[in-house]
Amino acid sequence: MPIRIECTDVLDASADALILTVDGLKRGMEGNIARQFERRYPDDWLDMQRDIAYPIPLGRTTAVEWDGDCPWRTILIASTLHHIDVLTQQQKASVVRAACAEALTLAARRGCRSVASVVMRGGWRLGLDEGFGAMLDAFRIAGHGVQQIELLICLPDEDEAARLSAVAEARLNK
Image: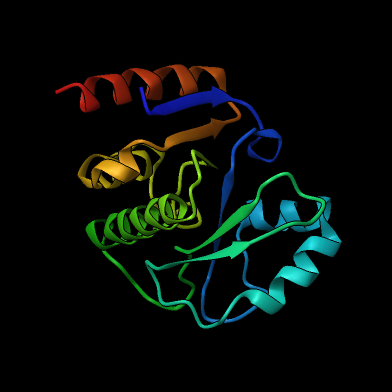
């Protein structure tokens, strides 16, 4: 199955690309995983900031090619966090779906064979199931080239990983 779910820290994941979420309005409004990335790879993050063109519209993703200390060759910066807008649950899911679809498309264009991510939830504004469902929808409706990429979803909890694995199996094999 092109979607794999593991109980692991996304910053320990083996993949060609990594998705980090931000509020795309301006620098300094990163999500938890991006802040963890910054603490683990401070020099990479500092240098990478020069290559990220802000603002990034909500629901859009930009790619940064990288050859630094971090193990990923492509960092996908997804604008899914919104600190000003008030959105419905459907709009929040649409933001995640669009950002995930663009991230996968950008990865495919760069020849990536795998992309690691956590469940994109817009800064906890979507439930785990809703965020995961939006990512599944993005993957399912993507073109053939994108569907050849392995999307690795990393979760910290084994029970959640097992449950989402079953959800993915059922939804993608319809």
